[in-house]
Length: 203
Length: 203
DNA sequence: TCAGATTTGGACCGATCGGTACAGACCCGC
DNA sequence: GCGGGTCTGTACCGATCGGTCCAAATCTGA
Image: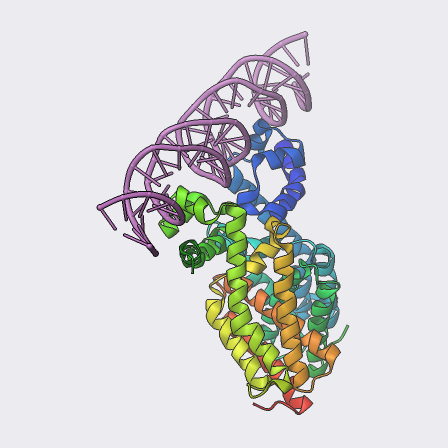
């Protein structure tokens, strides 16, 4: 691996936390220097396109994680011909465990969702769209493999992703002791119940 | 009414749209001038505390609307001794209709939720907390008046508010044709079903 | 009409912004 | 050791930022 790429990849997690905390506009290069130890020269060496390129790299980084830890396992559970893998119910459970861990029970913002709410949305529309589309499609696929009808699987998947996003918002308020766990736990139960009712929820 | 207050109140809707579109950090005084027609002198005359005071005024403005159109009707439906008013089921239906209209089927950001996700949260924590707490409490109260047990009513109310917030996030992506309506419609159905099952869902 | 109150425009301020440029420092393989 | 490639620090730039200030314009009630 080229050294620029290696060094660049190493700063992406810190960059991601900055964008989560301050948003696109509120994140300055001074913040980046403080969080990464990189001076201006280095920042522009790694990200010649500047702030836009940093945000895009961070979104790709987040997307890669989700692809490996959430989307691909769901899609694999939805692909019955692919060989031994977790069944739909286990995949759903794993998904909720992964996102609970990644979002730190809601204390850590979903960067893609936060960008969707602001004016950075336009600059990164295709990435944002693809992330949610992929998530919902992979989850729907796993639900269908568990016997749920396609339309209902789409609706349940869409709702589950919305619930997770909304649970993060609620978790960011002080009245929110355990809100993330309660809300996502309820949604997980709903998905598992639907799989059980469809009768093919093998583990 | 004093003229400063009148003029000041008149610019709050435009200010709110700015903060929704650009967020706290991305909203500049140049934006404010362009959107309101006010020059610097006028802006500081109306909001001597500057940007913080503008954001706080806008949050209050949003909160006032929700109090009148959403929270108070829910609370009234929950207060059986208060005289004639809509029953719990009708109040729930009205709530969904109001938020669908207000959030323009998800095309308009919930400013309180968006602030909750960013670093403006700390400055406005008590307002943000109070908004969500009030919403959930009022909805829970209406559900309880419809016969739903307190714990379950709390959970359903919390989930409903999370779903609405998450539906807004999803509605902001291009794959989102009708997503807001589908997701909130599903949640409304769930609340109405729970009220029916509790047997006191009088209109 | 007039005086006092209120509102306004915009000059000015210091600070910060993202970005450019590049010489010097550093790294690495031959 | 050397040369080429990569990385770094920082001076510099024009632009923009939020806020201060105040004279002029406007409003209002007597």
